[in-house]
Image (cartoon, rainbow, N blue to C red):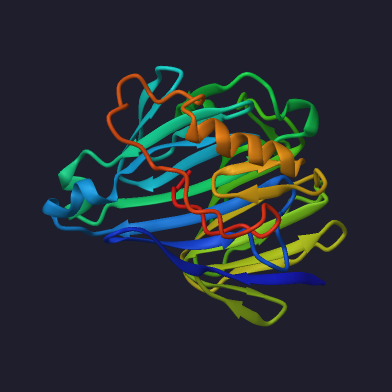
Amino acid sequence: MLDIVIEARKASIAPGMEVRRILPFRLKRMVGPFIFMDHAGPVNILPELMPSIDVLPHPHIGLSTVSYLLGGQVTHRDSLGVEQIIRPGEVNWMTAGSGISHSERFEDPAVLAGGKLELLQTWVALPEKDEECMPAFNNYKPEQLPVFTDSGVWMRLIAGDAYGLKNEVKTHSPLFYLHVELEKDARFGLPPEHSERGVYVAKGSIEVNGQTYLPGQLLVYSKGIDPVIIAREASTLMLLGGEPLGERFIWWNFVSSRKERIEQAKEDWKQGRILLPPTDNHEFIPLPEDRSRPSAPPAPEALS
């Protein structure tokens, strides 16, 4: 049976930039190793407001950020010296490990004014053995991500393995992440091999066991339950999940299996021990006021 339906909550990360926040959720903190999920856009903003929605340099530890666009483009800069524009169909996979900072800038006025920007951001928690690994960044082009088509079905494997598909996106634990497009009345099922599986309705509507689900809803299933998903109209779905990693603490942009490690990361950012991107180091997001414990996260201020 269906474990839970998570309803996206509205979160404002900047003037004019409102997102749907799906994970973490108080009754379901993670789906497999996925601990965070935001859906931004389509964004339509006046050119004079463009600088206000840029995500300034900010830090991460203990996770990988995954950026995937349905439309538009975003410029990524990080403390490794990487500068990368991401476009639809590409994957930016940044592993924070022991500590990294990065920014995300929206530098094309035509994209924002035309309502073309639409972005999915997820965080994947790292296994304990990899939480302090060296930071790394990779951009993967569409031709590196296998696509499968069937009657009424198109899907791209963003990362991991599912339905017999695999790619070269480097992950640290068993997982899957897919972009799926369904035509009206198409039928689809979840990959059966993973312990936890979620289907997020980004556009359109689907029916499962006679119940209709709409944009902004994440349906979560355990292994052994194989629902039939029917598209009630042309629909865009994001499928994600994998194997659980155990308890994780999250505070602001930090994730760890240890509360004390998050406290250290706070101090590292305050003291400048996590470097800023060399080509984007004139401003940054300061550490927010600490009003909560690591086990009860405030809403992160950055998309990733």
